[in-house]
Structures are given as C-alpha cells and as structure tokens.
Image: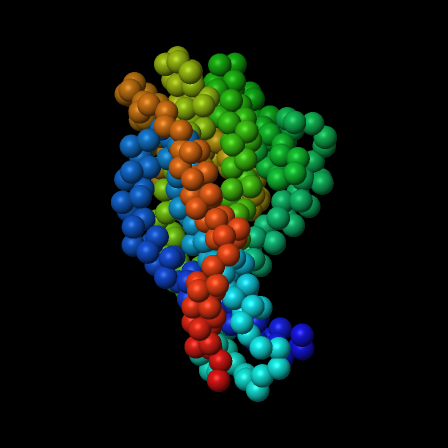
Length: 308
C-alpha cells in the first residue's frame, strides 16, 4: 500500500464527503422552516432534540457513507499498483472539504480552549459566586453555575430558585456540549451560513425547554418570568465566554419567553423520539454489517470520477 494509493483515497474521500454533505445540507436548509414548525408543535425538549438531530444529520450521514461505503469500496476494488492520479475535480472537492471544516473546527477548538481556561480560573464547587452580572452555566467537563452577587441581592428567594432550576436544566441536558458540537460541524458550502435559521430555532427551543423543566406549576413560572425581567434589567457586565449558557439568552426573544411563561397554555404531550433515532441508527448501521459487493463496486465507480 503506497503513499500515492493512500493519497488518492484521502482526496477521493474528502471530495465525496464534500459533495454529499453539500447535498444533504442544502436539503436541510431548504426544509429548516418546516422542520422548525414541526418541532414547535412538540414539547420544547423534544423539539430542541429534534432540531439538534436534524442539524447534525448532514455531517453524521456523510461521515457514515464515507466510513461504511466509500473507504471499503476503494480498499476492496482499487488496485494497489495503478498508473492513476486525482483529476481537477477531485482536487477541487478536497479543497472545498478543507474550507468546509477549517473555520468551524478552529472556532470550536478555540471556544473549548477559552472555556477550559475560564473554568480553571474559577474556584471549585458546582455553584460559584462571581462579581460580574450573570446567571449561567459555564464549562464542559466540569460545568459550574455562575451567579453574581448583585443578582442574589436583587432576586427574591423564589425568583433565585427558579433561575437556578433553569440553569440546572441546561446543565442536565448537556446544552453546552450540544452548542460546541453545532459549532464544530462543517458549513454546507464555504461562505454560506445555511443553518442560521435552524441554529436560532434550536437556541429558542433550548431556552423554552429549560424554562419548562424549571417550572412544574404556575407559581414557579411567574417567579421565573419575574427573574428574567429583573436580571435583564441589570444588564451583563461579564466578558463574553464562548461556551456559556445564560439565563437571559437571546435578548430579542426574551419578551416571547416571558409571555410564554405567563400565559398558561396546555403543553403538547411528551413524544418519545428515541425509537425514531434508534431505528435510523439501525438502518444506517446495517450498511456496515451487511456486505454487498455490487453496492461497493458501484460506489467505487462513482469515486473513479475523481481519478484520471
């Protein structure tokens, strides 16, 4: 197995991933509005999980096809000794692949490093009192609940408890990890923010879900709404941290959150989507364990488009 053999495999694989991810990503971007509408008919937590799964779908499916089909087909049917090189289409596809990944991976790794560095400077403990005006969960491996002294002074005992329950819901749902994964996934095409609407909708439903988890009765919803108003009035004096889930979240959608808490509307029934996700994983995983020479040969012929 020569270096040129492995180099052709790498270039062809990157080109195949770029094309498949662009196709699936474009489809997700086109359907983002409809998927969001469906997600908002579910309970907030279910809707947020659905949008998160759809957001990662292009990357996960493309990586699966690459690992389960493209690479095995190349290794099975590509001769070890052959006078063949990669053509311009293959090189262009590989460059697009690198451009799709470089920006997100750099931002995600930088955010993770800043978050780790910020966490190292904090004292030990699940709850940390800070001087900056903030209520939020920071960190990944050891997420800490940050509460400013000013917030503790301004909020009533019930309001503070509601705010803490909201942030504990973010911590239990691993929302900081999900935010990092979304940040690390590649763009559909370089210089096209195709998932902006989907990301905004996921953020909204994530906040709604934490609100719902924090409020099991109407009185608690009123306390949380009051806490949101008071904390928003204090402003934020904290230096931005990339991986930080705060109580206020997006200021532009704050009024909608408050209205939702104060209007006692019936919540949709809880729908377990685990079975759907599991069935999808089983169908995809079957490609790894069910050998099909005809399919692999066809995939290899497609990869030959990038060779000359």
